[in-house]
Length: 286
Length: 325
Image 1 (cartoon, rainbow over the protein chains, first blue to last red):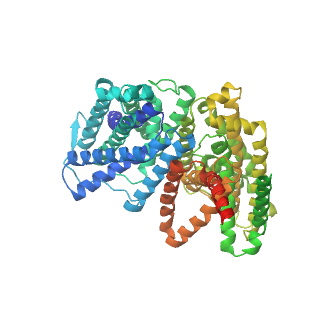
Image 2 (cartoon, rainbow over the protein chains, first blue to last red; image 1 turned 45 degrees about the vertical axis):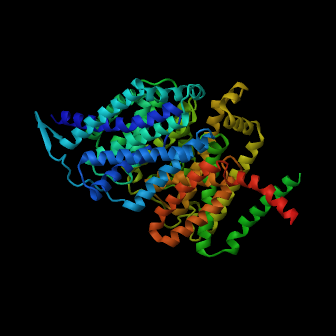
Image 3 (tube, each protein chain N blue to C red; image 1 turned 120 degrees about the vertical axis):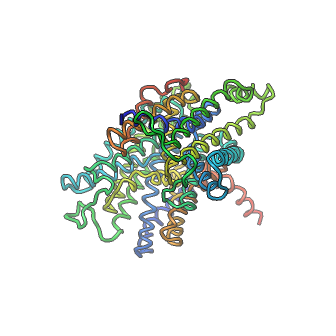
């Protein structure tokens, strides 16, 4: 029974991994650009949730939406003020821009919130569900379910709507999209807003169930790399499957090898993937 | 011709200044800044070979630094050898690491290399924190008192200063020599356009691999020098992300892909870092890295060529002004 508990816990966390990784894969698919600050977006989403609860109050719906909006605006702002200018520049500028941004956000968070772990005050999502011998904290259950729904929603948005077609058109051929009357800058800003927003939601959802500190951004950023590498760069559906798999692998290795080895196993998997299948499960060759 | 002469004069002047610096500023405080500066310049110049010249941006170079920093104390702790005997072992392991990362990622675009470097550095950091043979999270300690000269444990920092200066000179001479050879032209071609370079017959993967191996060797030596001086190492000060950050920012600020860029970067950043640390005490470290993040973003956005390129653009205007006045 314990093993079922471990599997369910891993999948629920994996669902959240899937949600924030889908943002990273969206940016990569659209503009061949890796965001090194993506984990910091997740971390900021957690603190936005905390600040909303302390200052405004309200239930999970309120702070999740607050985190989504705050990070959406941040994502669009970062695209317009920074990414737009480096995207056509040398590789050094592309990588340093978000790498520097990650440091800036991480150490500003340390400066403002201190390095201590915090958690949300008891929300309306407290309590545990007992299902045939398995204990399911309601907060984790809701967070996982919402994360899966939103990831699927993002996939549908990209594949079934006009906005999604426009986004993919810009990704496919910027110049041709412009000739069709699409404004690439606006679409790419939207993609950054969606990516950061989904990371923000993922952070706020995780905040309901787990404690955190400013240092979690680095870990989540790396996990997002592994998820995206496994799912295939540019595939939202791929990152949904991969997120669940990585959550599962992490939970299993924490259970069998000890908690400290869970990240070692996952990063090791990343190196193995680069050697064996760099295009991931569902991606095109990079 | 006159350009060449002035740059040559500048190099001679800089070299002389570095040689006499500890004689003029002999206080322990200034000597410590000098040694820190040299170490930062060595690490960043080593990073520069692959990150600057070849344009393959590593954000996890701490893995080579850390391996080089651990091996001297590992051979000392396990077998009682002088720490300096661990240097070749560190180099060998760093070459191995470089191959593990370079082989798969150099077939793909540059982003994969950057992601792999940061992930592997973090992997090794966590792993060393759990590995009892290397002291796990507590780390390792070197000889407190020199058993023989070969322990290289000195009371004063003066001998370290000149050892580090020597290594920096060797590294810069190597880089300068490579710059003028076919290898240097290959690197610049790859950086400008990998596709064009390949179509002109440049062995792209092989050249990138050689640059990474060379860079890894010198970074590993920098780690060894660091630990021989401090006599102590733990996972964070060996493999922490901030070690990689320092190499990147020092090189990029001065000018990535230029011979003296890292030197200029270190000349500006190390005194700045010392100043913020002493002005804000322990809390200053956090502030330093906020500042570092900000500087890196500004460089990326406005001046990816670093101060060196900025100077090359601004200098003609200044000269014209000076003539007019």
